[in-house]
Length: 249
Ligand SMILES: *Cc1c(COP(=O)(O)O)cnc(C)c1O
Image (tube, rainbow, N blue to C red; front, side):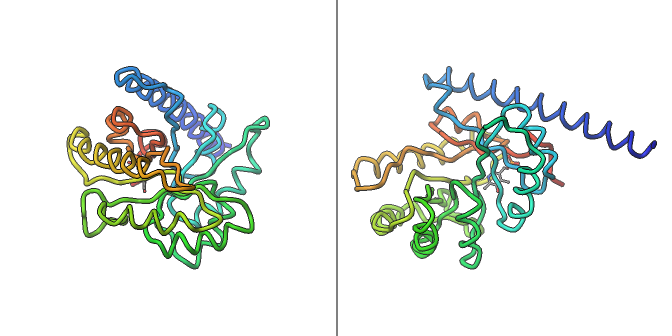
């Protein structure tokens, strides 16, 4: 009895926190759009639910959030059915994006689970995705760029991206929608601004090349720490985890 009560209270508190956080993040996105003369509709919030239980996802769903990000295929594979079973989305289409590194042997599952892959960092991975997705539907992908040139980070070096886009553009089964980045960690969110600018400039350059089948309409950049700056610099997808669901520990 007592135990149940405590659990119930914990869940109740959790729902309240997610709801407050979500409202605040949406407001911040709206303000950043106003400040930079953008339409607030042009920014989508990817609620990063990695390490968090299906109940956390359900509490965000209840507040109208229907786009979620996961960084591990196995975790998503376990969580997505739980969310589907537990949710009453009233006809809303819940979408999942993969934002973390993808191993070749997980591609086949990934193309079924996710409606977009943000983390394509090689031509060979794009080719594998193409092969597996072409029998299902064209899969939207983003090319991950290592704007800070950090050894420990995934992503193509900025100088290799244009050549990679030319090669990937020929692949059936994938649609190149834009670029994604995780900039170097800085204490001040403003420190990320030059890296966001660089990603936006690179996307604009590629758009200007008018490569057939390449859209370059999406910029996936900004996390809990720096999503406001990212929106000011043109992000269309912000990936926010801890500011929404609490720290991961
Ligand atoms: C975990 C993760 C995020 C979210 O990070 P927070 O700082 O918790 O908002 C965003 N993008 C990627 C690629 C991640 O792995």
